[in-house]
Image (cartoon, rainbow, N blue to C red):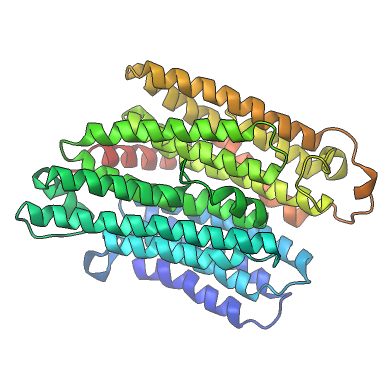
Length: 479
């Protein structure tokens, strides 16, 4: 089953690259994404045997199930949208774009299935390389700069993660043990590992994968990449690729939590979470580019995720739930922002206003996405953020909890000013001749993502609830 989960999207990538017609090729995307989701659901809920392969290098455990299931669902939404979006960009060939979408699905699946720190590293680097060509889809100087920045900064981060992996292996040698990078063996042996080398390994791995995740101050690639990439690519990066990096951090945290150094890791994660939220709040104030604003929103929510893990207990469950809520809501925001950008030919608030009059459905969804991502009830992010905040105060982290609330308010005000400037008012004469209008193919996936985010704010299905609680227990008690 593990091999099928990897080979199916890889085969679809080859098929997409082989299809000669730019018109027919995008239609493979929702078909392949739906097939992959069916395979994932079977692996999560119906497979009679544990999903494993490659002599134990591939294994699907409780944490992997949450991330893999969500990524497959998000990829289906992105593929559905891309099938309607790419025909509108008939001036550019979509061969590489479609193939890279399936390739990213393959590499994200590999990260989730990896039971070995080295193989997970390979999967993360492959995800970066597979997604880079899609950032350059617009073929202009700004997208080229964003692509190079994404590759260079990401390469620095992944190099630090590789060095951290070496440090972790060497910490075993320093203690007279045989070195290993299998997760279960690391968890079992970590109490005997050399503490100084373990500290250094955790910092390097956290900073390395934190760069891929987009935590401040390693987030500098995000505003350019998210600002210049098509909306569907921004969605996949903000909800999918960053989730892979977060899973890598969870793996490293799971290892160090089994040692006596867990307090050190928790304090670092709480600090970095609050720092990311603070940086996002500062850069959102008077932000004129609404797509760059979404990049800083992603920085904020990556901070919320690591803060929840650092707090631990019920907050860890809240962080895993927020992973899903944030990704769904980011799909609403990035895809609707892409439609608005398409309608106006600009992403600056000086030139974009009155979106609810120009593209009423996309404008309304953009506004609803803003309310959802800032924690307004009854959307899913409200539930997950409230869970994290409650656990923060219940655990006695009063300063962190107070800062959390203040920063949430600052983000709401800063982000709200930009969003309202986009959706309110009357479109200027300079945009009156733009031909783009809302279409079913490019608004239906956004509406589906919003309804899912609303559903998770009102009711969490029992199978998902069980997966989240099992994953939270597994994270907190890896043995």
